[in-house]
Length: 416
Image 1 (tube, rainbow, N blue to C red):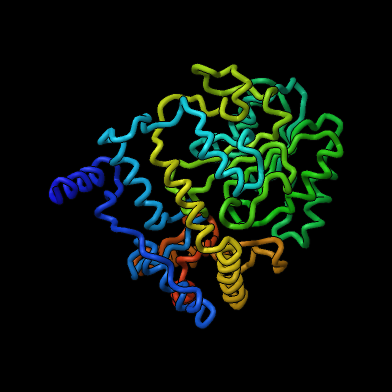
Image 2: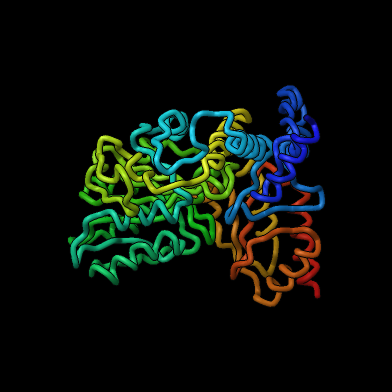
């Protein structure tokens, strides 16, 4: 029996690229709260050591691209795959034709909205395309956006412009901006008579700039403009209550900061707008508006094990304490920004104002220094974003020593 279970786990690892449940082992309990009160660094050190599979030599500083799922999430995925392969459950091990009411109710409670307003997607890019392709816009109607958008949040509108004659206008955002108020004035002041949609990132991908989403959405609604928030970097990096944010549409990629497996996405559509949004993929029930947001999940067979991992990631955050997680993320980012500020050759792209960044810090370096730093960092186990400038993403598995190692490497390169 044990040998059969081991072979099942080994086969899962081979076929799906994840360890089987038996191979991962039972998740360990969190360290006691008394340790956190007495020695927070020791508590976080044990979280990394006991809840993640990261080897000690690895410093991972790139959650802004793809995050790291902890053991409880990996186990939830593996167990779901095993149940599906053994057919011990009556339900199909899939999503794509199901409404998954129970799943969406749990996530709606966490994200501060109604279950009827949530749909599962594979990532924020897909969710953004559902919105862009699903809205009825006429030639000449304007979509206002910024010059700091991810291609996944911009190209859906550019496609609609090329195909249907809408107008996409990008507002230049200062790097760094002076205040949240400046950002509100900039975007709302750019709204014109043909503006129908304001589409912007809640947190930008390249610099980690946090936009004042609530204030922007409130002002846009007062002017009769729909708001679409590309929230790919938001879920898990800072608190997200969708009704409080006041946006009309929201696209999320929880596989960055919320510990979920790759391939988890989220679409929020304000209830009053559900019936007017066309689906992008049509299969059975595509026009059944009684399904509410679940209508956008009727896309054909997908792997339900990934959604089990989605729920496990949310539960892991709740177990740790969301405020504790968000606080730790920002504490480490502030440490990174302070170290970057001391570099004579670094141009900070992250504002000093704490309200304008969360867990991502960016700064520009002379190109030769940055390229050599990337090369040396790889040899030292530092996993970084390989973009045109330095962008550090700090999460709860980030150790202060990881940041110290990076900045020591950078200074070594700068010294030549």
